Image 1 (cartoon, helix red, strand yellow):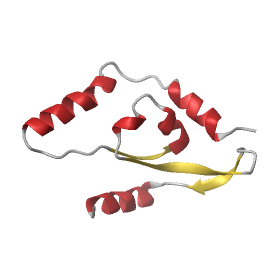
Image 2: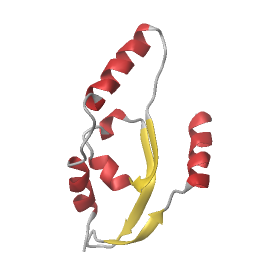
Image 3: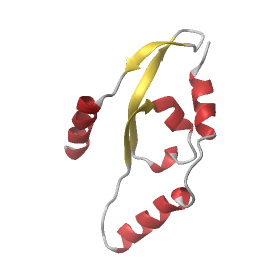
Image 4: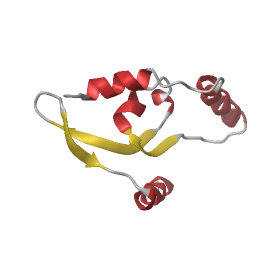
Length: 98
């Protein structure tokens, strides 16, 4: 069985383009210097658990993505949330209303 921790471990190994990890701090600093509040979100059909394990997960206000339900032993048993094109736009509206 595959667990949430397995997915997060896979996420730790996501290869990022050069400069991605530093970009968030740099753009946040620039926005603050201009008096702009900036938030970063991910809306993805990919796996939330993997994204949460990535080196940049803590840079996001929130991650909206597909995810699994887990049994009492922590094994993935069934999709809990599945994002598609239509549901992605719904999440964009939710963010916009904040």
